[in-house]
Image 1 (cartoon, one colour):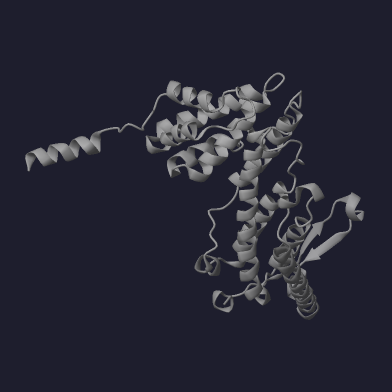
Image 2: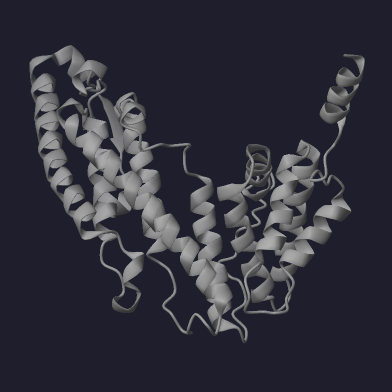
Length: 333
């Protein structure tokens, strides 16, 4: 019994073979995965596995890897820019965020999101130098923007029970988040090389298409759920839903040479029908508020007055009712 306990303790206390912790180890792993040569090849599976191993160690280990990536991105974006290194970083980060352990994904989020105090944003690569590698640099700009949008996605699910439990404002907010992903994917640069000529770019294409498919699936699920409870929407939620669904409709038409980037026509058609129903609800709620204003002078006196910018309406005042219509959970089903 004593020997078994000793063996068990040794197993539990052992750091394991896959728990790199030092900053030097993290920097080395990132450098190997994002080496410039060969400039057209994506990070290898072997190197990605080495990066994923940092998520099986301590929080310090994961933080060291996240810091190494931000340093590598910053270096690749300086001067004339190294499009191959920057794009390899973005491809690797997208894989780590999808497949990494929670502790690793958590540290990457902290490192990559815009810092609220300093404003530092490692993914602010909209002005990445195009230079000689125009195609790769264009995909650096696009992939960085798409990754920014993905970082803001909620921990959402397509499970009907999860969706049914969401209040109306949360459901509309999640729909808006996935609509933002679809809109970002639609901005993908057009193809300029064959897959055999630049495997790195086409790996970025594959990952972007995965993101579009995931966004499409989540949009479709939320459109269906919202269709079941459309009559429970209040004025504010109905107005926001109309705006979000218009964005979904705009994500349908892709450039002719880049058809994969647009949403499926059936999903867009469902969104269009729901938008038409939401506009009817919006009209009803607006008319109900107007009637309430006319009938109840006290309620009218408490109405909020919002001044629109002078360039929009010459300083005219617009009144909004201070009440908000809302549906009950039981009426969603």
